[in-house]
Image 1 (spheres, one colour):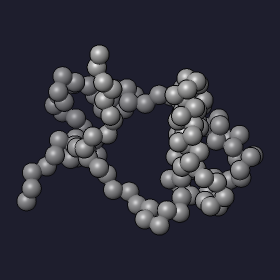
Image 2 (cartoon, rainbow, N blue to C red):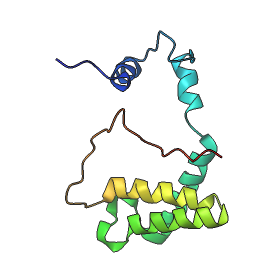
Image 3 (cartoon, rainbow, N blue to C red):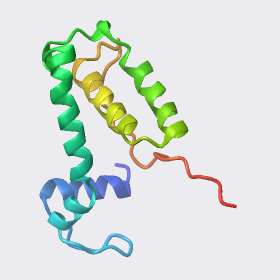
Length: 126
């Protein structure tokens, strides 16, 4: 039996609803951890745009995946955000990813967590 990764230990504790020991220099109750790892303002913008999108594109769960290039559109909007700094583009990216998650028809669509890997590329330091 292989040893558990740090992420597997954390997942076990989160699923049990308890983090009883400090993680690195962090020691906080689970409800505070959950609140600190989310942005209600971002979610509010996402939901508002999804509601408006319902009138443009139809009900999320009834959309035909092939009708729109959601991944290409998300990439395009990421580039636009880099160029302009307009946060609306990030909200659009998140919603496009959500719609792809729900309605996507990728031939190998699945969820397989990639724990303990590199998840965010670090920026170069001056």
